[in-house]
Image (cartoon, rainbow, N blue to C red; front, side, top):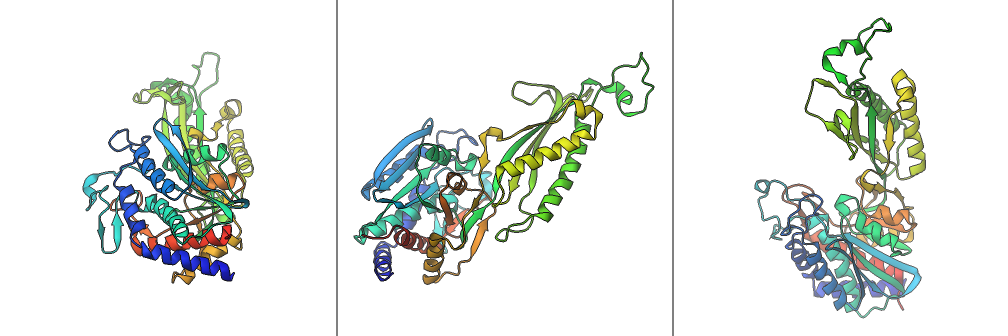
Length: 438
């Protein structure tokens, strides 16, 4: 351990000699707008390729071999690697796409200015998560500047599209860019995060029978079921109302009865995120007519954001949810013959759960080194979902370790500069502890 401690101290001294590097690189990254084009299509804002040019330049200067390819047109991943033993391999990952600025008038600073005041660096992507990418690069830079030769292979993954489902990281995983362990440098407010729940996007399609609204009485009030009775319509929105009430009770039950010790009770929620209803089902899976209240609607489409716990599997939660839907349908004569349809991985989105052991050597290294630097970290879990999920789903032992800040996905986003400097040193120490030295 003595040799490792000496190497860590040398890396920290090298980082201190260029103390402003991480902050200045974060500024440079923030000043290149890289809004995910799935949210806003604007060439002036969709400059992910230009951000990756800068990342590639920095990684090349460190002697790293570069792999670069387009995940989507003009939306490249960049991966830099230093060779070493595979059994001690480590990857660090961050995403360079950002969410839209929103209403510019709510910002008190230029969203892409990288302004510094009161120890904070402001701008869209400052904490989510261009500072994380900068800290990872700066950590490797400090190790190289100290003349330290790592025994294990180390890689940096700079990926796109995390904000829209993580398809940059997914593509890297599919291409085999893996390691024994991974550090995702998302914001953690100084903690070391070892778990996050899984996430599914689900589409529920409820089918009724279309009709004229004037004959609604024939549907909802008791009528003699004589041969001359008009065929009653079935209002899909009425069914959806009953379904949502049952879904809320199901959500309450699963949140009360199941918990994870490192996450807030009840985080495994089912968010009803979108609902569209009307007449006729279009080829896109949505109602064709949604503006005519004179039609009894025969289609209701509900999109769900469905969270589950780190120690659950997708097979378990899918079976459970489909059983809930099945039993709901069995209570209704119409739905027995026209059951509700469940579509998994809506938009291709699926985040596997992550549940790394708190006593994992990489976790303990990051915890101890951050404490050594004066931080007060604790082991906790990530409430949201990040790219760690995709590596964990491929069998990589993943940990999340990043800086402190606020305003993510909102106005006046910032990263705390002192925490960014601490994160850079923590990452450098974690790399040395895990990879070892020659």
